Length: 136
Image (cartoon, rainbow, N blue to C red; front, side, top):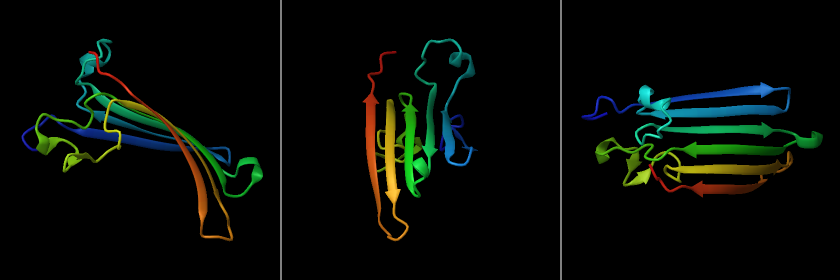
């Protein structure tokens, strides 16, 4: 990053197809971690990270195109941020990452049905966001 040689984001993602109809997936984001503070249990503010973990079940009950999905997202306080606005992950002060920015947990439940004979699909989305107050 500009003027900050230690400000780096690392991301990892993976997917595993279990059986024929179940998919497990996830992502991990690491942003400015200090390894000595990770295991200290202090909750140090500069250890910034985020995770996404989910499961998707396709063709539920043998019905074509009926899919269920549950997903958990979490981001620590100050993730994607930087003291210099040129190095934060924003565009016109809007986040480039998750719309909840940082310091949140969210569980999303999605049920979708797409008819094979129609270009239209129906989907129900139920988010359960939880924003926290940073106390450290």
